[in-house]
Structure formats: structure tokens, C-alpha cells
Image 1 (cartoon, helix red, strand yellow):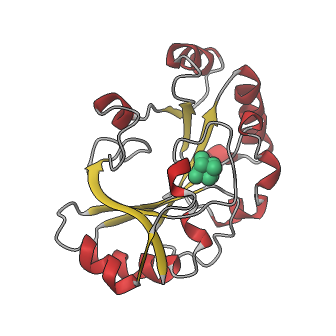
Image 2 (cartoon, protein in one colour):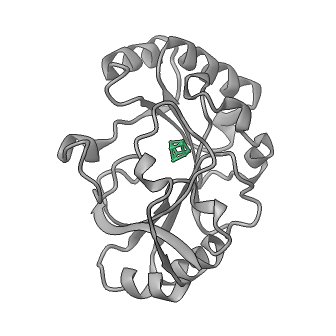
Length: 212
Ligand code: SF4
């Protein structure tokens, strides 16, 4: 059984798949509490559904791109069989995960978009660093940056773990808290080979609107 917060179709707003139509399933629950979390509504609210009920609802929505998100979707045991089922229905299955849950059992065909929590999130000490061993060039590593100390910390982590050789790296400013222009200038000045991204769904729709 799964606890599902929402199922909807939208434009993929972040990652290298940005801009593409995508079906989203947001699972309920998260064991972290990032200071800048924008999906706190998914901590508790949700409806119980079986894997097959989710698949039935998702089937026919249209887009060939699918994303499993949360909350932290991998806290729920049935998230793993759900991903396996969805891989049969979609060309690409993205899984957004916090980096603080073991990803070893996740189907390797799924594209992991894994956060590395910077200090300003308040959750850096919850990271499971062994997860880096399961990343491939198909996966993506995401740093959400709130300030210059986060940026410097992220640069150190990239270097210490040789992350540029593992997977593409995404840098995202905390929406409304770090000016994107500032982040862009830091990246250019440091000659960092990372992809800067904005959460475009928040520019297309209001920040307050759910299901986008
Ligand atoms: S991991 Fe994601 S859902 Fe959980 S608190 Fe952090 S931002 Fe929110």
C-alpha cells in the first residue's frame, strides 16, 4: 500500500528534463525538515492506494516522462515495485530523493535525481554518503543553494567526492531567498561545470498552487 499526496500532469520544472510534459506522483511523508522545504503539505496529507491503483490512474494521462517525488518517496516500501511497474509504461522514470534514504534497491533503469543537502537546509548530517556509490552518468546530483556558504560547501563536496565524474550536477537557488543572478555569477567566476536551474513551474504558475 502507498500513501499518495497527489497525482498530476505538469511541466517538469527542474533537472535536465526541464520543460518536458511529465506525470507526477507525489508520495506522502518525509523524515527530514529542510528549512526551505516547499512541499510541507506532503508531510502528512494523502490517500491510501495500491500500486495497481496508482498505475491505473497514471496510465492514460499522456506524457511518456514520469516522476516519482515527495516528500521522500523512497521511505515507502511499495515505492520500489511502483517504479518497476512504471518503467514498463514510460520511456523515462525520474525519482527525486533526498539523499538521506538508501537507494541501493532502486531499479537501475530509473533516473535518480539525488539531493545533497547543503548546511543551510539544516539536514546535511542526515546524508547517506554511501548513496554516491550507486550513482551513474544517467543520474543527477542536486544542490539547493541558499547562500555563499552553501555554495562554497557544495564546491568542496564536489571536489572531495570527484562528483563531476559521477553524474551531471545541478545547482538550484532557494526560491525567493537567493538571487539567481548571484548564483550564476558565482558559478561563472569559479568556472564550475554544473547546470544552473530555476524551478520553472514556480515562474509559470504561482508558488502557492499545488499540482503543478
Ligand atoms: S527532503 Fe524534500 S520534502 Fe523532505 S523536508 Fe527536505 S525539501 Fe521537504
